Image (cartoon, rainbow, N blue to C red; front, side):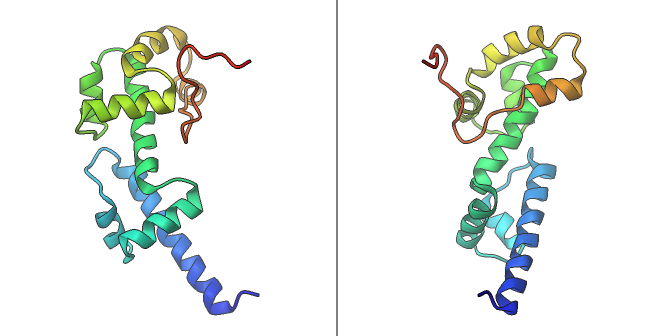
Length: 149
């Protein structure tokens, strides 16, 4: 059985984790690192990483990259920005890391997505396009050219 002090501490930790998640959602384009996020909620970086993964199913870095890729997808659908411009606008400092993570989450490279997404969402309201093109988390995207048997 869980004691009241343990339950109260768990609830305080969950509130701090929500603040971290909200900060990532707001400041995804800013340079964020686990130490700064942890300091902001008075936790150690290790404890924050473990607790965040337990609460949300992925690391703070994974969550941050997912937010960045979601925003990148919206910018690429517009079609008026290059992949490099989008990479830096969403807070990534390495085009290679951005392209690799984008491909892992979306299932195709950002240049291909830019070309195909613009065609596939023509005439679709942006709120609907955002929902139907949401990235798949945790490496669930199938590699290009692989069919399910």
